Length: 460
Image (cartoon, rainbow, N blue to C red):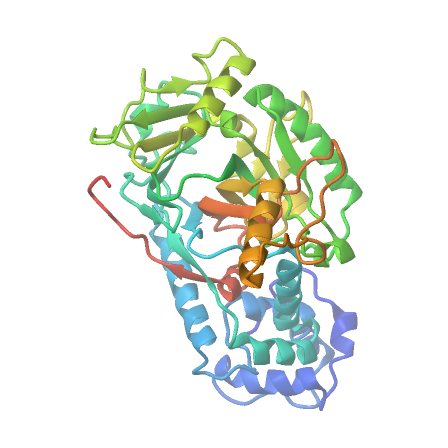
């Protein structure tokens, strides 16, 4: 009744599985929950042993089986098993297969690069690569705070609510039907447009930004303990130029700090972001007026990239809007231009350069970890140091200026780009996006408490 999750069975790894070993004992604990009766005997054949090799252990983890070293009433375990059921239900209830599974995760801050790598290592241990490490991870798991993720269904009606301490509103991801005749509530909208998908979000800022706003993609769950591959470096150089030409906006791009560098306090997560000029349309609704329906026709509303004289004019217009953001007006942001290159349902980057074949995002870039579409404010380093000095002075109870050395980041060299570190970010929107065909369900549930959507049918 057991089958390996991989087509390749690692017989060499299976050969090291000896009766009396820690992994053998762990398997003896968990297999009775999978088999009607009995357990593996010491005289199991090589073929049977192969089924409980590292490959099979990973398969058991993806099926969501309880880790044998965790208490059945552990709060983390209860939330994990609930998330597995929720994730499975959301996948099965979707109208399309494959489909996109999306969750608003802005309620809780993302991990640092070091924490993300440590979590990946613990997940690998749970998959069977190191039972001793799993024991340590399981012991510490009771204190782990899972990030909450509220479901945002694909092709919703704009009623799904996003809310955190910085922003409150609604979000919708509209997607063209992958094949003619497939159900889609937005078919008429896409009938006259070539874009694959369009992301819209609308709401009010609860806190006025105290720095520059950035929008784009951040890899919050990636394994930063691994060095950067040559292919990733090459692909990054190829993909950035066409995106910047298409958007007419300068992008901040990095694969993130790796290995030992990822352990520093100022380590960066991998990201590709730009200012509000990355958006294709922005609408400002004055306080007291009714904002347009989120899934309605936005033709002629607000400002658009297509309506700007050139890229410089669009950048100027969006920077002017960003500087005037307040907590009274309602803001609507639309993004679709990158859908020319990003096939979310197909898990591919396409049309990057002429004659270049499509590139799998999962296999060549992301691994099994989903990207996060984000809108955040990055506090300026000088402003942060000034606030820190004021706080230090107040705490000391005197007017002597405190230095920022050691505790706070050092001034960066003249002309260098400001690092987008997590401690300086305030997330307004943080949407985790993954395909149900490529997502590593068990690993996601080790990190997130996945919840149903929050619906709200009236304007804020």
